[in-house]
Image (cartoon, rainbow, N blue to C red; front, side):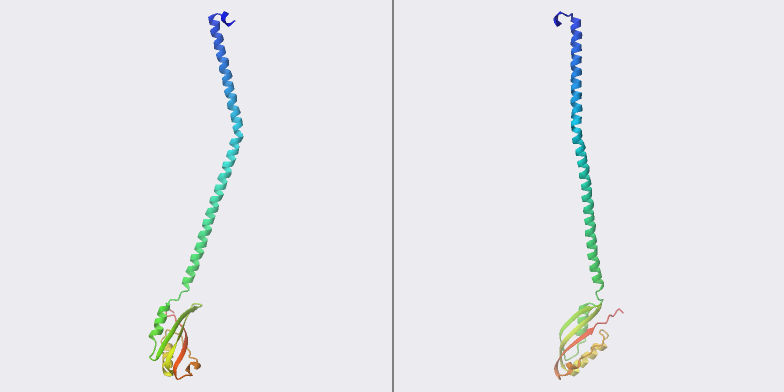
Length: 180
């Protein structure tokens, strides 16, 4: 039947056929596009919510590490503060100076055995033990220590004067602070 139509009518029918086919294809692509958008919309919404959750979790972790860093810095600052407070307790007179003073004050006839330094309540003490040749040497050493101005007056227990020769002695001396 198509073959019986004149050429102009055939051309017009072909044109209309191509236009309908183009319209169907455009509608088919539009339907596929909208179906794809509708199908991908829930996935997009879910991925956006997961992205926001991940960003929130990253922010929480960042704040947490910042808090831990602050706590670590605070702990380190407290340690430094404790160390500085210990340094503030240090006596202005160094132990080797105290030992040197005691050794220089030694009188003839005195042998110093041990020197022990300690500190209690910001006061320095020196425990000095040794052997004296006789009572006179021991009393001279005690007088030298008392008059030196470097130690508070020391008492000599009478039990240490019981012997005449080779007398073991122990002095516990409180060290005077020269800055006061």
